[in-house]
Each structure stands twice: as structure tokens, then as C-alpha cells.
Length: 382
Image (cartoon, rainbow, N blue to C red; front, side):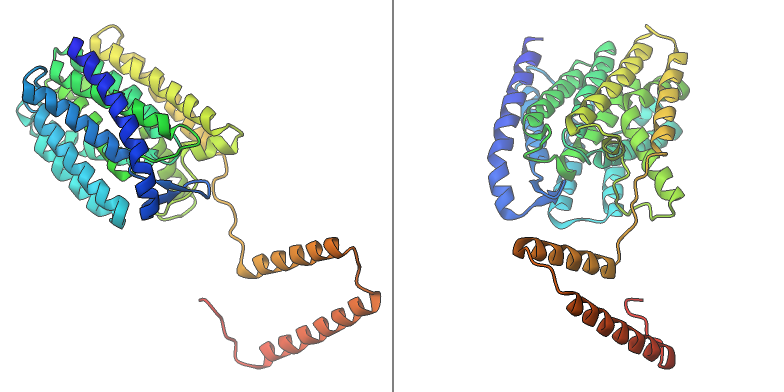
């Protein structure tokens, strides 16, 4: 217990310091993402990964807090997924590469001897889904970190109930590292989690939950695993349904996530993070109570119903605006420029000049129209 408190405190402070040190060099190197029309460095996730591996590895090396069977391999696999995400932050890897990397890492850590082959393969798919869901959840300041902290505490409580002390310590260290990161990522964020940190967080949380539920029936495990990741799952379902209804490619980004739609309803960025964090806390609490046997499995239906209501309600919020053509943009810019010039000079054009310009414009338009009608029709830009 004492080591867990010391490890969590060290992880929080080290992550906060390292994230602050990384911000300047990463910003100068140009490894940034655009968020609300401002550049944001992305290596905050690197600080979370480095500190989590350092603190948990120190406990394993000194044998003060050994991670236990399979948990060390889980941490190594998570570090591999984080390395892949780091490459994606720098060079923008394709989504299929991230999926393949997460699937290979998940296949290496699932305890098949306890889950069985079929349940183990389903666990691999679920780990990949949650890993990518946390990557998609990193679309708003502080959101992925807040949901990650809440989920880490919930998964840690499930691990402690199964007397998996090493796994519980690892999750507490991850939660503390994410809390230190949130000191710089709370809206308005000064540094981002990036693919490195979001993939690492999602992979570690999903794999830890699978470890805690290993040996339980598949149906009851689903009733516990879904509440632990209800917010991330709802975000993915909302985006997929929205893009299918709008006939947009699934991999084409857009302002159609949970936070984007809540912002359109008038919530502030901190308000969005607090609201979704509270929703994650309520869902995770249900999962922990069901896992511990303090609540019946039908309680999960409340989480399913709440998530369904949120998704269906936010689907009614418009997410895709009409794209303006180049001609509309040019006309609007010319109009604004002329209005601004007239305001500054305090003069109005004479009526004769206005009529002459109108006559020339109409003559030019009629000539161009006739040329288009009699000549060969040409279409630019497709």
C-alpha cells in the first residue's frame, strides 16, 4: 500500500514535469496537431508512457511490487503499441497499420489458457476496438485523459478484487501519470496526448480488464467490460452511424464526435470534459459493482440504455455544414474588402460610376454566357 502511494505520487509529478519539458522542443520541431485553429504539440503521451513504464518497471526490478505473471508482458506490449503511435504522430501512419500493430500486441498478451480459444479471439478484437476508440476519443482537450483516469481506477478496483496486486499497482500508476498529464491538457490544452499516449492508454486498460475477467463466463464478462468503456464505445458508435447516414467515408475525419456535438449545443470545452467524465464515472461504477457482486447484472441495462439515448439524441445535432465553393468564398471576400474600404474612406461611389460598372458587368456576363453556349463546354476541377 505504501509503495503504491509513493509510486502514484512519483508518477504524477514526473509526468507533469516531463510534459512541460517536452512541450517547447516538440513545438519547435513542428510535431503538432491543429485544435481549434491553434497548433498543439503531441508528445504529452510520450511523457505518460515513459513515466508509467519507468515507475512500474522499477517496482518489478526491485521486487518491491512485482507485476505478476503476464502483467510484465502486457506492459512491454503496451510500450510497443505506444512506439507505433509515436511513429504515427511523426509520420502519419495509415489506420490499417495501427490496427495490425494493436492486433498483434493483443494476441500476444491474452491469457488463452484461462479464457479459451474462442473467448480469447473475441478478447483480441475487443482490445483492438478499445485501443482505437481511445485514439478517436482524443478529439477534445482533456477528454481522453479524464476518461482514462476514471477507467484506470475502475479496472484497478476490479483487479484488486481478484487479488491481482501487481496489475492494480500498474493501473494506479497509469491513472496518476494521466492526472499529471491533465495539468497541461485541461482546456485550453498546452500539449496533447497524441496517438502514442492514447493507443497506450486504451491498450493497457482493455488488456488489464481482460486479465481481471479471465476465467469468468463470456456473457458475464461482456456485462462488466462494456460499462468500463461505455463513453469510448458510444463515441465510436455515434461517429460510425453519423458517417453512414451522411454517406461519408468512415475513415474521413469530421466534427462528428461526442465533444463536437455537445459544443454545438452550447457547452464550454471544460463543461464537455466534466460532463463526459461524469458519465464515464457512472458507467465504470456500475461495472465495478457488477464485477464485485454488489449489484446484479441487469444493472448494466441502465448503462446500455443511457448510452443509446445519448447516441440517438446527439445524432439529431447537425455535424456537417455545407462546404462553400471557391466562387462564393471569393465573392464574400471581395464584398468584405469593398465594405471595409468604403468605411475607412467615408466616401460612396457616384451613381454614374455604379451604373457604368453594372453595365460593363452585364455586357461581360452576356458575352461570356453566349460564348459558353456556342462553344465547347469545359468543366474545371472535375
